[in-house]
Length: 143
Image (cartoon, rainbow, N blue to C red; front, side, top):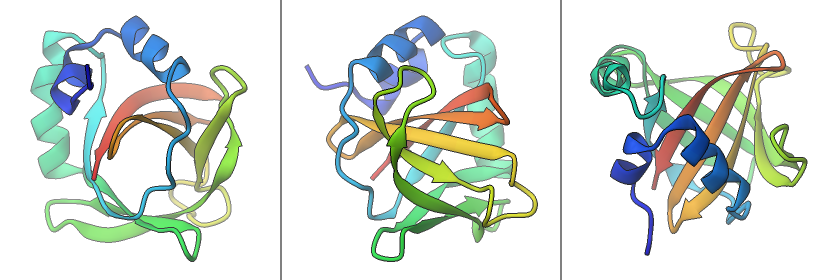
């Protein structure tokens, strides 16, 4: 059975962590994605926050794999800003392979942020966002 974004939205943090640990790094993303931020996964609060965050703050990422960077789509105008370097690396969750999205040298605003992603289904990625070494949220990228 293939997991969908709707399935991910309904999962608890423990379920998301298990899926992430059991998923491969997958293909390097290419192009425009639709993003969903998951605060308090599986809760009623998460379902309320998803559309608010999507409208006001963050709508996804646009990957440029040949140049090894991405830009986030932010604000209601979906401006392509906040650059991250993209490269293979190790997950902070389990030490296994992941695609790293590193803002430390590319963004003054987001320099303390580090994301990592794995492909949980074709064209569907589950991500972990860290502020420093603290995981602050999960996110979904759909291509």
